[in-house]
Image 1 (cartoon, one colour):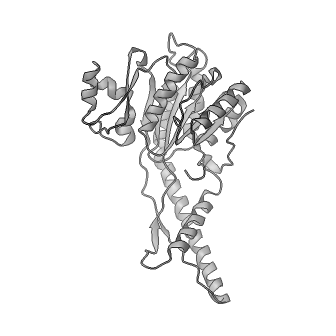
Image 2 (image 1 turned 180 degrees about the vertical axis):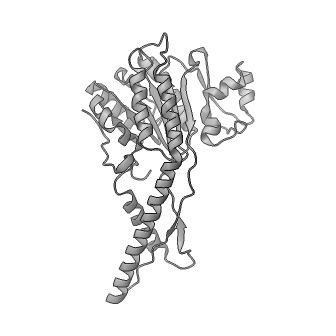
Amino acid sequence: MSSLTRPGQGSRGRPAGWVGSLIALLAISSAACGQGGLSSSEVYSPPPTLALVALVDPSSGRLAAELHQLQDVIRTTATPGEAVVVMILQPSYGQTYVVRSGDSLSKIASGHNISLAALEGANPQLGPLSGRNWKLIHPNEQVIIPDGAAQGALLLVSRAPAGPSPPNLIRLPREPSNPTDFQRAQYNRTVASDNATNAARIAAWRGEADRSLQPWQQQVVEELGKKAVAPLPGARTPNQQIMAASLVAGLTTLSGLQGRRLLLLLGGGESGPGMLAPRSFADVNLVIANLADSKAAAAWTSAGTNAGAASVSALDPALTKLQLAQVVNHQAPGQ
């Protein structure tokens, strides 16, 4: 069994000790900044929103199982504003176009003899999925120009609600210099009290956020269930050519999404990664699931690391069953 990422998790897939880590950071920032001119409170900054692109194998006997695995991931936890895109592994998604100054999606669509609706459908990252207006694109952004093979490639595109506003936290006091025993004891009591208050406020916010996201989670789970019972006729078994085209499409979609970007390959990984361009996975967390071949797992780990991935997790079938939701929802240090 092969895995680079085996995080310890708390309930609902969140890392154990995440509240304690936040409080420690608050204490450090307060000590560094001092109290002069600072408010006695600050707004909690939640972990980054998850931007998840999942690639699934449409060949016979695999699609349903992989979509059920994704259902379990979605059920386990969600982040406010989370973006989820599910794409099937395809021989071709068309070409990738780099936006120039003065471009618009309508101009690009007209120049490539496709409808605006088809172009928008192939690039959900440029619209409401990322909180954007279709009419606003920027130079150097990448746009997928779909071809006929890409029809129906997107199985699901969804964004979670924003959730409740983050709570205000007590800014921890600065430790007094050269304190007396009484001052040190008083400071420690204040910090302990403030930490407890902050932890309670964060926990209450998280509970409210979870409740607000439950209808969205249920909707996504139901949509995936419907896709799982709808076979895709003529689907090909993935090879390296199909994998290469699908990875480019997945990364292009992720490039327009904000937050913690994660590319989840649920099937087809046995074909191997092929040649990944340098820095092509920069700031992307790569998870390859259901890998029965240890050599393929090693190849993905090496290729993803060399391509600049923020993290690489290669999971065999047993680890996929036990740890997939935890790995996807793991908040790596510094992210």
